[in-house]
Length: 118
Image 1 (cartoon, rainbow, N blue to C red):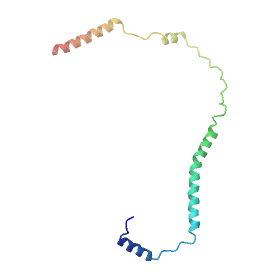
Image 2 (image 1 turned 120 degrees about the horizontal axis):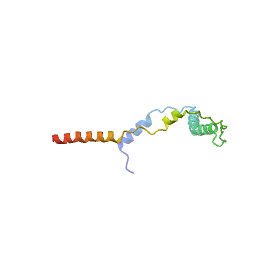
Image 3 (image 1 turned 60 degrees about the vertical axis):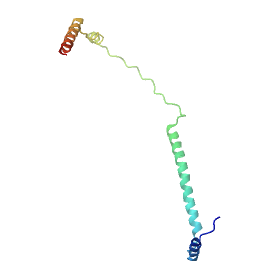
């Protein structure tokens, strides 16, 4: 240990000479109250999530048998007229090959004009 500094000794002596307040008579009771409050907060913080989980499990009840809806009567299909069936199941309209070839020729001609400009 290093020897104490004379200034430290002088400061310590000055602090000891000051009057110190007396300990309140109810200090023990106040400390116990603070300790009880902190303990109650800790217990509440620990039990709140457990209580919430228990409440959710009771409300959800995953162990209970699932209720099954009774089978409903089958729904009868309505009759569709033959004309509508023919339209519904007809192949989609497609351009003829001559129309496609004409479009192709027009596209090739347009590209050729653009290349000729170069």
